[in-house]
Each structure stands twice: as C-alpha cells, then as structure tokens.
Length: 255
Image (cartoon, rainbow, N blue to C red; front, side, top):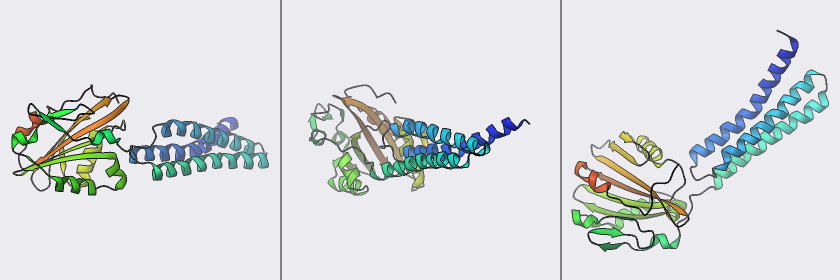
C-alpha cells in the first residue's frame, strides 16, 4: 500500500478519535435529557468536524516532521473536543423542563358531561359520570414522585374509584416522542408494555393490573402542550373508548 495512503489513513483515524467522543456525548445528553436544547446535536456536529479536522492536520504535520506545529494543532483539537464535552455535561446538569404558566393551573369547568380547561380549551369526559372521585391525595403523591422542577413543569389532576385510578398530567411539549419515554419508565419499574406508539401506551403491571396511557399534543397560542391521561386498574378494557375521547383545540404536533 502506498505511503501516502497509510499517512492519510492514520490521519483519518486520529480525526475519528477526536470527533467520536463529541458526538457520543451530545447524543447521550439529548437522549437522557429530553428538555435539553435540540441544538445540542447540531452544534456537536460542527464541534466534531472542527476537532476532527484539527486532529487530521496534526497527524499529517507530525508525519512530515513538523513536531511543534503538530503538537499545537493537536492541542487545539483536544481543547475543542474537551470544551464541547464539558459544555454538554453542563447543559445536562442545568437543563430543566419548562415551567407551566399560571393560566395552565386554572380550575377545570364542568358542562354537558365534560370537564374543560377554560384557558387551554382541552376537554375530556367528566370522571364523576363513571363514579370516580377527585383525589387530592393521589395528586399530591404524583407531584411528590418528582423533584421540584418536575412539579413546576406539570399540572396534575387525579380521580379514584373501585380498583381504578385516573391521572391527568398537563406539561409543556418538549418535542420528544412521549410514548417511548413512558414505555421505558414502565419497563424500568418491571412492567411489560403491550402497545407503544407516540400517542398510546398500554402495559400489564407486575402486580397483575393494567395501565392504559393516552397522549395528546396540542398548541394554545404559540405554546405547545402535552396532555397525558393514565388509567390504572384491574381490568380497564371498557375504559379505552372513554380515554380516546380526550379532545384538544388543535391537531397533534408534528415531531
């Protein structure tokens, strides 16, 4: 194999070693923190390209005997990669789900057998029509299951009945596919999802019960929201059509 091919192959290898950690770190942050800025991956591509180009140049300079310029160029490559990786870790640490505005916390209104949010205009069948009772205790437990940032970013309503619990969760839409997040959370808890899509999740609980989740994504003004209805019970088959009656003021957001 010609020497120039080997030289460039080695240089490409060093470029890949410089660029790969940048992209892998950015992808890890984007996956683990759905509320991290979407631009983190796009910016990582630029940082990886710069770090890789500098590493490629440093390898060629070293091969030609220019040791000092090679060290300087290699150091710049490491500085770019290291700085961006540190930035990614910082973004992961400080990123928080966006807090809900005060209007999102308005009380629900009952009319014609449905509950309607007066500001955001979503509605769903009144749970009391199916003998469910509002449960402040379940609402408190749901909020306390997350940290303070989660509580600020979510508005929770909950109802209970005979062997059935219903939780309605309103939050700002982050743009990430909610179905996959919910299914992953159920798997970590030892449950077995039987249906997973962007707007629906169903699973058999390890205790023998069932969970059915419906998600609606909508816009109110210039803000995107996510409305998640979670029903847990021994047998929730008859509740599926009821959950599907969730109505929002706009079509689901495109991903």
